[in-house]
Length: 60
Image 1: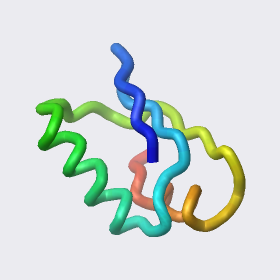
Image 2: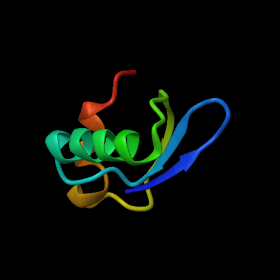
Image 3: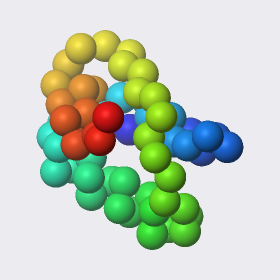
Image 4: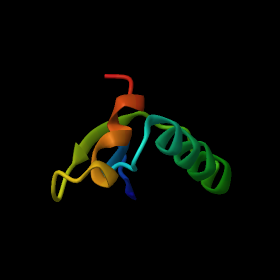
């Protein structure tokens, strides 16, 4: 997963394999950067489970 930090929130490129992995990755990102923003967009580069399965963890 690639995370872009924008003024409006985070933009994700390819979420991870599962909801749990994506939630842990976001927690790690928040801890490392000290930021806690909303995810405002998700882009998928292709359909494999390792690139979209974790999008279930997002609050839309």
